[in-house]
Image (cartoon, rainbow, N blue to C red; front, side, top):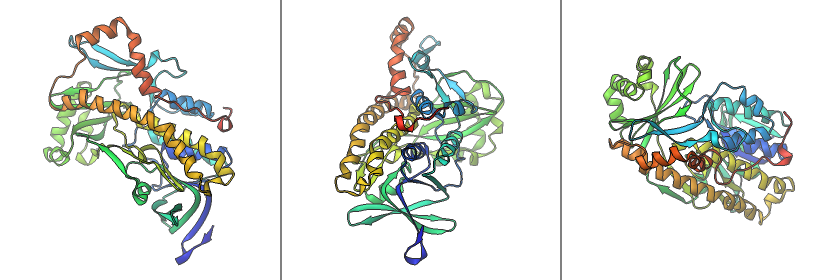
Length: 419
């Protein structure tokens, strides 16, 4: 560490990762296990934020197994979703996605508060001598040498500074500072709804099937947690002011109508200040990389919360990235002109899974969410219900797409650890 111009601290590393979410911590951990010096910048002091995704998919649990972290993960308080259902025309549930039929070691989705997962990954990283996590360090821009990114500038409670690196990996989400600073072109898809994120304190037990609730133009999903239910209410985009103007009593009434088993608990939603808006976006960079810099996860492709697949996709991006760039980083090759071809390999490997999953989300938007928000009844057709009930094996394909992904990534051999 040294002092730069104006007294700013200058740190040097092999790879700087911007963003301490699932993708950032996974890519940092795996690179550190390859002996690469990694510095992860996280702008918050901790990981305690409610509107982070909580779904941990079978493919991610397989990765944790490979990294020697599954037993610690499994000990975290969590609930398990084994299927996703829609109401049928006859009023009975139709299980359209059945994770418990998957031929995998962990045939379910674990619903784990993301801060617990991130704490686990950060602790595993801290055990590696070449891993550094800097909290309360917010990237404010990129550093360039000619046409190449050579690191980032940051702000922290102790002042401003710089991290110089052979490679900058942007994992700072859909509002990525890095992708904005570099000016990557983006393709956006129209999304007609947003999500309001809130919790309902309760000791009641909800079923292990994930059943979207839809009634009179309202829709919501409930995620069971220890001592409360995390709820995600869906509504038309641009109506946040209207929702808040109706007040907390109206919001409680809508929650009780959607979750009648929690009707006695909704009074615990204290005020509209406890209801957080999550603006939904669906986009994809046309190019994920430039000399010295790579975007992955939501920084490369903002995902809809539908299916909870964004975390799984981002983590698989991180695994592929670490496997492809670890060798060149160790050998000092990422400073060379040909390094951009290495980064292009990451995009080539991960673009098809991204397109497939985003296309699936757009279908779900058009076929389920948007009709529900228009007040239309959304139900599995009698023909579909009949097929699924007679041949439940057909539920495996959507379970594979959601739970495993079109191109699952495994932990590299050199990143594996015994439990």
